[in-house]
Amino acid sequence: MWVGLLGLLLQAPTAPPFAFTDLAGTWRFRTGDTAAFAQPALDDSGWERIAVPGAWTRQGHPGYRGFAWYRTRFTIDQLPSGALGLRFRSVATAFEVYVDGERLGGVGGFPPRYRARPVVPIVLALPAASLTAGQHVVAVRVYSAESMGGIVGEVRFGEVADLLWQGRRLDFYLLATALLLVGIGMYQIFFWLRRPQAFEHLFIFLYCAGLALFFVSWMPSVRLALAPWVYWYRLYLALAAASTAAFCFAFRRIFDLESNRLVTALCLFFLGLVPPALILPGWGQLRGLAKYFVDPGLLVATATILVLAIMRLRRGAPHARTLVWGIMLLAIALFHDILIDWGVLAYRPEFPWMILVGSIAFVSSLAMTTAGKFVDTETAALYDRLTGLYRREVVMDALAREIRRSARTRLPLAVIMLDVDRFKAINDTHGHPAGDRALTEVGRRLAEAGRAVDWLGRYGGEEFIGVLASTNGAGGVHAAERLRQAVAALPISIGRTTRSITLSAGVAAYDGGNDWPTAEELVGAADAALYRAKDAGRNCVRE
Image (cartoon, rainbow, N blue to C red; front, side, top):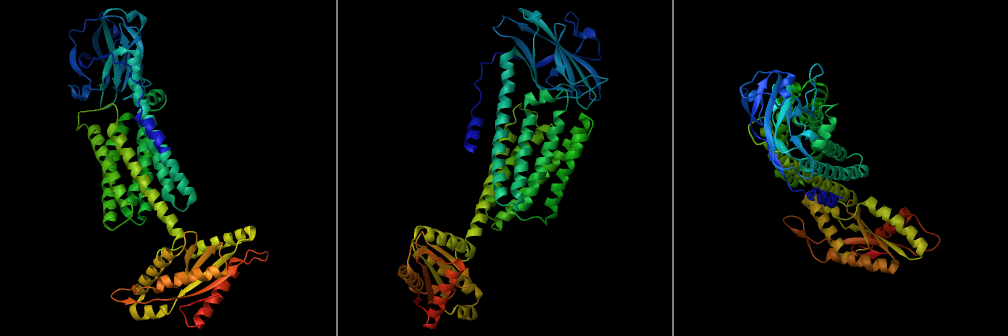
């Protein structure tokens, strides 16, 4: 799934040849409002000149709230084969466009039903009357009751198909990114269903889902569709806060930081930002929420999590290195975009390359981290940490299956019980760490001497068990002898000294007949044979 979605992300739609004119430059500007300002015959030579793109609040009108008009002219040298239009990337905060006195459309609402809708790209087709060679007049009526107003994004004139393609390209990349994130999140659901107690996988799924919706809300077509009903920036902030809270909760679980008050505070902080983002009434309040709470919170959270991840890495936490690199890339992207949002960087790209690439890299590192942890957990459930052999429960389950298979196929089955001779003396003389090292080496030698098809495990303490399919009693004795010799062949290092270690073994077999035993009965028979080996002087095999 990941490969297919990544391929979709990298395959951009075929671009038509660009044939547009950028109308950036000096426009005529005047505050106030009258219908005459839209008329092409109006003499605007006495109007103020102002730069587009650019907010009027930064060009001599810092405290102005209300209506203002922009006017400029463009020339059609020759008629193209397709329709012509204008593309406005962003106007703050409500506007409508006129060409040669005819209204083309707009975004937002004017008083008394004022609706602030900045940063909503729109393409408007020219009327038939304006599709003539010569000079034409564009007039833009703008209203803002916020701290920013004016034509703050690029304005382009050209064929409608070319102008629409710019929005479709951005739609494509953002949607492909969202699908990639959803695909990664679905794998986390699979892990969570396998281990319901591992809530970090659920939180990562919620993080991926929230981030995917975050990018969907950024799509130009979605912003334009939402404009009459919901301010998209409201959803943008709510999804950013909710997804960050989900990640903070996941981070707590991944590195067992439930008792860390700082991480817990970050979780609750971002969770608490969701309701204000959904209920604050105006654009100014939402911008304040972003500037003074969401953006600083993201910087603090990223720095905190990066420091904690590095500390965990230095303490030897598995998989922390992958996550550290992912957080570093995300931190660079966030820092870049927040500087743009605060106006420190004048460059304002239409396509969010930095945060998109940073988010994909970070989510991928997060997915690899949790996948590695999942594999380690699953492995720990199968294998004994000290000896590397199967755990008792795993071998007993395998024995029950092998008994049923032997009864069905009429093939024999052998069980071996092995015990380290005089193991208590090792612990008493050299200490329990030395005993652990001895068991580790015994487990390694047993694994090397056993067959790949055998089930070798640690039964408990210094006892081991082997289940040998398609093996009769004589074959079981032969295998037990091979295991015994593998352990006794060379002394085992147990710290500053070495010691020869031997095993006693007992073998029990089932011939595949109708009267088939239970797993406990077969183990009990092998255990009884083991005690006979102990009574016979140890370091031997009995059936």
